[in-house]
Structures are given as structure tokens and as C-alpha cells.
Length: 163
Length: 418
Image (cartoon, rainbow over all chains, first blue to last red; front, side):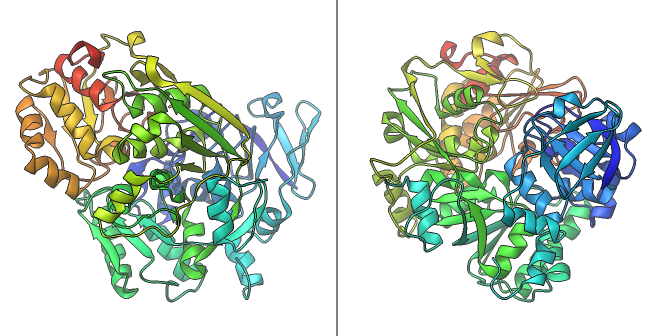
């Protein structure tokens, strides 16, 4: 069970905002983490490890930089719930084992609401508002990658004929 | 039921007779491109996590240093050194430095119709202009492809964009793609493919076509594609290459929807901050003061774009109230612009000429903005803070629009000065 408070964002949050171009050549993801969402006070002020990012449509649009998903995972984001995700970010997050779930009802969640997410069923409980939300089921192939903790583990578990 | 070109290329690369939207296929990759925004991360994953030693094919893994070049910090210098070391260790046949933006390098040197190409850059979708299928991926996917030479793909739904009529004077393919993104919205084509067809595509040069496919990712699309024709074949033959396969969509191919435009009454378009789908006709912004103007990027840094700007600026002066930066997309573009006198025209008008690279579009090296400043750019993104201060603003337009605007340091309709 993933528990955390909601860190709310709007539509079209691009990967430049998650981690700016000027930080991408730092040697490691650890070095980059402190610049995560650096210009977003809702994140820099309120985020604590395990919290859940709640976005609108097209979360993670723009650049393919995997550093965006990687710094969020490294910062300890519990999961990302959004009305929809941009394709490359979604794929990067799955590959890294960062839980990303589409939820058409994400608008019903308010800033700092306490959420409880069941990774097995994809059901979200809003403990503050006493509401339940459903998320879109992932295709089995993609769910298997996420369940393995990312594509590297997935490949390690079944090396011979993966692709 | 037939298949469209996108489905055919995916089918041929996954050894399936037919594929349908929604199906997940494992497809072999013809080329994998990476650049200096993410390659080091890919190398880390390749070695430390995948425990791999050699890439699957040293002639198909291509590296380009273009985002932070020439190295602008000790960090980027170290990063470039790691890339050069990796390329040498893996004996990569193609490792480019100071040759230009990765996508332009790929168009000029590698891509041919019928290929499936991936790149660690979201604008990899550009190569559909040459009848290939290409898309951007993150570092982990790229590292896996380096080992396997294949990856999984979800077959996308396709939106067919039919462009009929002739572009009026002063209106270009950049205006067309901005209008399309404005209409589709930034999420309107997420996970989908866009296939471009119609009279306009037949008329456009290979350079102008690449402006269309370059920006499909700004509507969320995975692929932008157009069927190859004589112009495509001439472009690759002039550069000593042959097509892998000429693929055409079947007459009974299925599309999620078909969107038709008559381009004859299109006007110059502007995308305003901070999303690429905030698109309005230029008349809404006429007279807006700008502090910096950028001509370049994988969207509009090609020879034809420099030529459009030079035609407008010949014998004129850029306003002293604006900084006008010009960055050719590749060394070949730079050389041709030098040989034909375009650079001289732009220089005399008052331009800064930069070395071929991603430059101001990437926002990490040249031409970053102070708070409160406004940039008018031919690039593909106007995200908040992408080029410097988060309190700056980015507007996007065509090469003609930015050239006309450079004269007055204000957003100016190019039709007034042509």
C-alpha cells in the first residue's frame, strides 16, 4: 500500500520543469535530485518522501530526458497519478519501476489530501475526502515490467528471449 | 482491410503479416541515435545495470554531441569525454562532434525510407519526413536496444492530416504545423501517429517537410510520417544512399480520424507562452516587443530557413533593441550558407552567428534569458523557463516571422515586409 499526501499540478507539466537542461550533465541522478521541480513551490515546500504527485492531462510532456522520471523516483515519489501522461515519460517511468497511473477523476483530489493507493488493484482511497477512485488498468505486458521493478529487473528475470 | 504506412513499417520490422492499433509488437531497430543530453545515463544503465559489454551492432549505434557543444562547463566537458571514451571503446562507426544537431545529422547522413529508427531525444520523430518511422525514447529503453537491437512498440492509432491548396506568400510549413498543434492540442495525439498527405506535401521541399514531422511530438504524437516520393528519393540518392523500402498506405487503410485543411487561406501563426498549443494568428501579437530572436533548431535551422530570413533581411538592419541569434542546424547547412553568401547577409544585418548545435532552443548554453525578457524563436518549444529565467517568455513563429520581427524588435507580420 502506498500512502502519501497529494502534491497537485495542472495540465501539460513538461520535463523541463521537472529537471532543467542546465542540470542534465551533472554526473549522477543523486546530484540532480535537489533541482527537482526547483521552480515549483508546491513541490519544494510540501513534498516529503512517499508523497503522491497528482497531475492533470499530459503529465511529463516534452523532452525525452529520462532524468525527469529518475529524479522523481530518487526523490522518493510514491506514485504519480494523472488524467493522462505523455508517451515517453510514461514509458520511462514504467522502465524505472516508478508507479504511474491514469485516473480520470484526478481533478477530485485536492492539494495535500491524504491518499492511499493499492498497487495491486490500482484503487485509490482519498482519506481526507472519503472518496474512492479507479485507475486505468495497464496492459499485462507493461504491468509485468512495473511489477518486476522496471525493465532491467524484468530482463534479468527472463533473459533468453526477452524483448 | 489494408494497413497504413506506419503499420506496414512496424509489421515488417516485427515479422508480422499485419498489425493493428493497440497490438504490442517486438520490432527490430535499424538505427539508434543518442546525444549529449542523455548518453552518459544510457552508458551507466548499459554497463552497471544491464551488465552489457558490447552494443549489438557498432554501425547502428550513432552518437552526436550537439546539446552542450562546445563544452560550456567542466561538467559538460567531462560528459563529452565519457561519450568519446565509450564510442572509442565500442568502436562505434559513427560518432559526431561539431557536425550539427543530431536530427539534421541523421537526415543528412543516415535515414532512408522504410527504416525504424529510435533516438534518445523527443524530436527523433522528425525522420518521418523521409518516409521512415522514428520516435524518441528514454535512456533505459535505449540501453536495452543497444543490447538487443529490438524493442517493444504499441501499434498506434493514426490520424491522417490532409493538406490541400497552396501556401500564400509569407506563410510556411511552420505556420501550418503550429495551426495543426493548436487545433489538436498538446495532448491531442498522445500515443498516436500523424500521417501527412495532400497537395501541400507534394509541393513542399524536403527541408520544409521536416519542420512538420519535427513538431508532431508537441501534440503528443509518437510518429509523424509521410510517404516517400521523388523528392525524398533524390534527397537520399544525392547523399549516396538507397531506400530500405518504399512503403505506401493502402487505399483501404484505417485511420482514427481524417483532418483536412485548405492551406490557401492560412496566415502566419504564433505559439505564445507557455504551451506549444497556445496558437493564434500573428495579428493578435503584432507590435509586441521582443528582446531576443532565435533562428535555428531542428525545427527551422536548415538552409531554406536561413534563406527565407536572409531574403527578408537583405540590405536591412536588425533593430539595436533586439539580439538576433542565428545557429545553422548542421555544418553542411553552415557551409552552404557561407558559400552562397547568406551568412554575410545575416551578419551585415546584425546577426550573431553561432556554431551548429541545439543552441538557444535547448536553453542551457547560448542566449538564455533574464527575468521579464521575451524571446521570439523558430524552435519547437515555449515551455516555462526552457531558455533561462522562469520569468521569461517564449513565442514561436516561422523563419519569415522572426526575420521581419528582427527589423523592428517587435512581433511583425512578414507579409508587411516581403
